[in-house]
Image 1: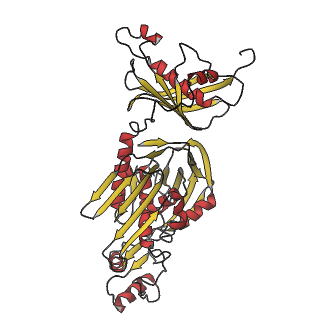
Image 2: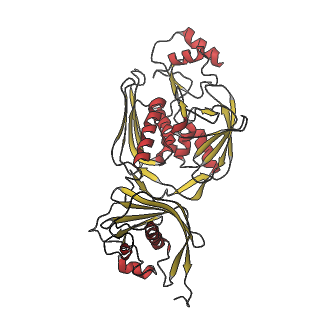
Image 3: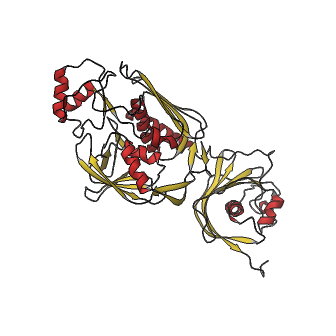
Length: 474
């Protein structure tokens, strides 16, 4: 798993302004009003039950999924919210990362059974770019999920974008085998968002008899009729929903709605998968192939992907280093930018550089002057010098290059510093510094990580100030 920065989606986004959406929950029948509000960077999507005492909240994360029967439900701190998947899919499609959803009921409204009404509301509210970097994760080997009982198969494969192929097969003569695809998330709003949920006629009868779709009005679901039904059954259904008598189309669907796409059911399954996989909680790039997906399987697959990311994000975040590849800056070029000199220049070369991160190399040898006193006979590079090496690497990213002016960098703060293993002669340090927010007024906030091989030796959050030298200083 690698982290990818420096692309068109390198910043986090929230809503441009608050928006309010009202409707009925399909399962509870409860009238619900939601107010979607902008949220701080790295907040994620958070639901707040404003109708409950103390207004508890729950984050949209797979760790808080408690129910996947007919929809996806989150619960934490006394807050429970269900049927979240269509709204989450809309956030993913609009590439909105941070939102506070204030909701006065237990279920997100179903509206027309798709993500389209949510997408339209989000587009009206607009998107606000935030001063925080969005880290995308990519996988470096296949992640499999299999449920033999439900005949579900899923795989996430390495890819340079987020793309999905779904296949559905319900042994239905009406649906047959349907396939849907999304080549990248930019296609979601136009190709997937409008696709509505679907149900089989016999399932609908069961749900009605057991009072499980109190908010259904048949304007929000495609009904598949793949078994013979009587006029009496159709009349009973019509009365239940207060409609004129339904009929079955020649294609095998109830005539309550017209299909928006020939494969609308398969596209809706893809829509659900987009929403459920957003519960991984960390944006990732992969090619997902899902055979017979459903909420329960989607969530288990999301858990597996999240576990893999958490387990491998440092191991696989190691920047690739090819010693025979020409560097971005060699040491003589570094000397022209940085004021440091022997014995305190702790970066030998820069091997990768973008607007948001930099990767440098420091070769540690027995001849380092500090090994004479730290420690004789047990040579260990001091932790403070590892942090200094990170800071110098970050300075090479932050210091303006296209100018004759000279600059110095000064530490302001070091937070969350951890040393995970010792550095000894013979080690090659890979120094990575990532901007946490854009540089403002010379203040630079970065996250630094040092790798030796595939292991992290040091990590820290560094804040520094870039100061232009005066003529007297130069």
